[in-house]
Image (cartoon, rainbow, N blue to C red; front, side, top):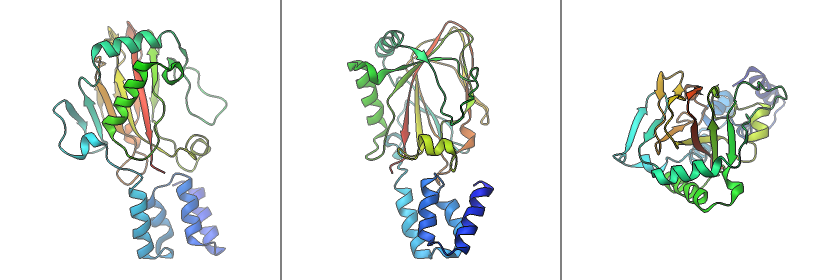
Amino acid sequence: MQTRWKQWVLTNLLRNVPVTQLYTTLLGEGFAHAEIVALLGNNLPPAQQQSLARQFAARYPLPKFIAKELPDNVQIIESERAQLYAVKDFLALPTCESIVALSKQHLRPSTITTASTEADTAFRTSSTCDLVSLDSEIANQVSAHIIDYFGFAKGNNEPIQAQHYAPGQQFKAHTDYFEPGTSEYRQFASQLGQRTWTCMVYLNEVEAGGETEFVKLGKSLTPRPGTAVIWNNLVPDGRPNANTLHHAHPVIKGEKVVITKWFREAV
């Protein structure tokens, strides 16, 4: 939590602002229950802490595919510093080919989620297709398949997008979550909630380059058509996980096409 927010809490405690009001405000800014309670300390009674903890935990259910024994086609890439998985044959090859052909007809420059008006134009150089806007049966089926695979009963999910990378194009190292307590969070997550899980599916073979590197984990994945890469953007207590920093490396030869869907907390 940033120093200015810690100072804000201290100031308002001294002003005798109700502690539940402070908790609610901090929660709305994207901070996790554990770090809020650590800051409020004994000002929040233990019984109330326990009740709020249960409510907070309900926002972050486990995906269906890891709630029990992992399916045979799921590989654990990392489990200690992050929850990172690869799922082979997540989509059939004909489905991948159909989405590639569909997406190429409706590309726009990719953007980044930042509150700044001076974004680095070289930071993300791919093209994006908003598949939801095409009212395509195959795109709707793929979106439904991803949602069913996760099995969340509550919460929001963002419309799937396709991203196209030509030679030389990349998405520099970034995270998918929104930083709590910032204008970025208020702009992109105050209504829908924090991003929780990401599901990215490779749709084609790349002749050279285009790897997805999880920089802080020392893990790099080579695109394989039909394979999904799935990760939790948060740590178990709901705080953002900086270890999910990842880099879509430049394509050297050929092209790379992926689809991505982001899930949000169940607010």
